[in-house]
Length: 534
Ligand code: 3AT
Ligand code: MN
Ligand code: MN
Image (cartoon, rainbow, N blue to C red):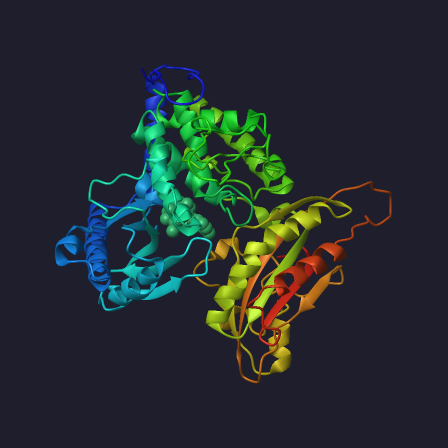
């Protein structure tokens, strides 16, 4: 007989909601609607049509490859092919701007290469498809594109089965046997999302609570797997665990309990939705008793599907500190929401990152073409948490807090000197020549930092600027790390900080990239002081 509850411990309370819980939850849903967190029926329908078209196209592709491999028509017709969704769309917490994360599952005679050639070609021929980009060398290979304006991340996995029928499920661990790592990883996203949905007692409550937490985490600047915070999967698992502990609670109360429990949690105790299981692969599962690498996880949020992994392995002492402080804030404000002395809008107030610190490190990645800049800045961003960790172990640094967004700019330069200046954060005509790109909100712009005059306080300016030829365009992406300086304070004496090792190590690390081009890519790390007058 199965347990009467979901999770690794019994719930903390089976209480049904009180009238207050229901009214607080209603006001939460109202706020989420006002903030555009739900898509309307037209958009939902459009996504369904897109998915149906993709499912049909994928079946045609499997059929085409089957014929290519000399299967008789009768078998080719049976070969099948099925698509699954994962990510926020599958969880049912997506917004208008969300993509659809889609996994294509093929039978064994279809190779990964076929997907990135034939399927890619079939997509290219479709009039609905734009911005088609294959990314074959990624950890999880993907084709990204827009289909009728809907963003799609398309993954592929090949199963060790002769056919992939429409009723195939991915839950069985034995399906993973004899698959290559890329297929196992591609299947993982979908298996994890499916498990999360199976492991929460009330899916609708979970969705509302998770929508709230996702919006809050974005506004507070703590939603970014790459930069060492929780990402989408981690937020979903953490909220799901609270749902297990309060199976009948309304979403508003789940959010309140979420903050309280996450704040008081005895880290590094892991957050688990079910016991960690062994399985048929030689791939290791998360186990801090066995693996020293797993022991360093500070805030482990473990994925439920086999093979269990830590979804928060990127966290550092600083990002942990910032996240837990935010849990404390969330706990206080939601207590006040229940007491009637605060509102959900108070909870969602944007963080004041650019007012919080006296010192900031500014990291500018620059290059001379849009395409190059996309890859280069992506690489620099993916390494930023290593700079954070190096800073954390530098003398005098108490906290190194990375900002989760990068600020992209495109600047037309008259000459070489201007290009070099831009690559160091000095822009020729601030206002009209270089409006902030769409991904950075105006009110996010750091005070006194746009443009940034290098100051006499600059203690570290490492790396080199990308040089540009006369009349060329310079592309820059700027990242920020807020620094809290600690150590003894002697009257009149300057605090001792030494981050030169950290910054120069970081610069050599990013330059060690196998696609790094000395002539066309620049990296500058400099220490700036906040301008109080802005
Ligand atoms: P959105 O609503 O789309 O913003 P989401 O949770 O769906 O939120 P993503 O589409 O970025 O977020 O990611 C969906 C899943 O894809 C989460 C994770 O299983 C996988 N994923 C995302 N980024 C990466 C990555 N860099 N490497 C491997 N897997 C990733
Ligand atoms: Mn997504
Ligand atoms: Mn995605």
